[in-house]
Image (cartoon, rainbow, N blue to C red; front, side):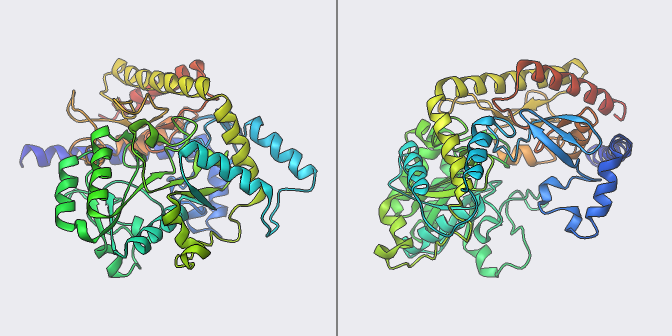
Length: 474
């Protein structure tokens, strides 16, 4: 048998034994969560309502959350680096948001009214000022925000083609459901990731490589006159927590302007994560539209599309209501906007100290993790380091490259099993760290302002013990 094939078979056997061992140990570690999962599966698909939370064999069931920590049904205090899908920049349930909500509820305000109010105006004014947009409209999720942004772009340009990045996640909406999953047998992020979509949806999405300016030029030469928009994250999330280069985003801006398409920044993750506003400002690139959610909502469901007045007008009377951007019953929900206003005002007021601190903690976490695994003889690397445009980040992913010294700077490298041990950096790492009462998703997730140097040290110790578990099965 060829050595490569033999190594692949040995690796598969190792992965199976390791994950089975971790799953058994976790079932013993968290029996109440296991029992509640069996109950949940009787009425909920797979026991819940968001696939990413439903880890196997079962997820921890949480009873309370505060700051950097959550507590589960089994009484474990768990150090959390997922932080509400990276939304909780200030940690779980920060006083700046919860106190504002508590006061509002006590005063008879906060639940749905079906009316507009001054709060909506004030929140939109803060958002537009901080991200340099002319107009905004609220909705309830990042998924809906990117959907509406694409509809606006297609209507404005009269074109049908959507260009997006391979590995980029833009929510479970039709044009976002291609090029998400890496398929090593097909050569990368190439396929449609959801059954039930019309064939025409897949045909109307073209997938580009992240941080590949020349590849972008080539795609626009082939398709530019049909491209309605290029949708891209300045800091790619699910694809591997990687910052875009200045050259890449500037090339995107130049090409969309030249060919008459729109540039859309998906800032659902990056917005208010690196500064009190958009990450695009670091690049000196102004998109036509941008989407925001997560951090800006302060832990409540709120999202927005912002951008050029001439494009946004298509959703209103001025543009004949050509795009049905209604936002949903709970768009501009009073409690959500109150949380968003309180959160954004706090971030604006304390911008200097909050973001400097987050960058330092992110770098400390990366150094600590890499050193912890190295001390036990395992080669691990973290993504999320800053670059010449974007400063140090509080987002990171742990990867296990097969080859020491390999630079990991594209989604393809992060997700290709020929480059990185994706099982070790995925389900195995998540389960092993849960046994140490540390919770991560996508290889880590995010550091919040509620984390401390002491908690980063605890993460390092947990990684050392995790490495020992892994080595026992090598």
